Length: 80
Length: 58
Image (cartoon, rainbow over all chains, first blue to last red; front, side, top):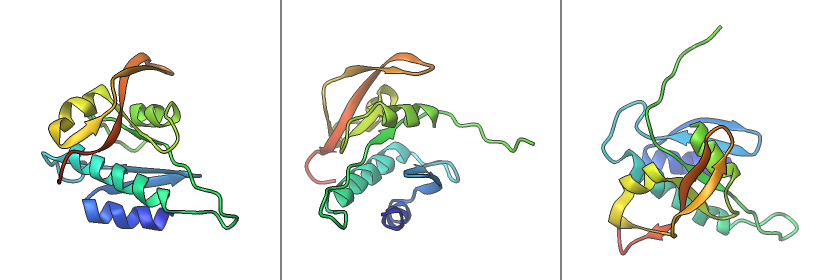
């Protein structure tokens, strides 16, 4: 599932930050600021939701996903 | 990024929960739910919506 998300991140121009267990984190407009950062993130979120809808577990169960989005200034640094 | 994580952990399965700032930026090309309040740990009550889909063809 995450490799599918990697492909979506590449398609929509987001940057994958990391995966934490069963969570996937990506950002838009960090490497290169872009006017449509929120829009492309929304496109990716919708694509992720649509992709997961089609997935099934080996036993036939559906896969559920929760997605959260926020926007604002980001500060980065290296600590330690 | 923390707000996004809180939006997710307070979210609903198979839905995309967005902050008010995201809603303000997205505009007419997308469809949204009505605003609701979520209680975000460390931030308190915050306005949120669900991103439902695109509007027409984008």
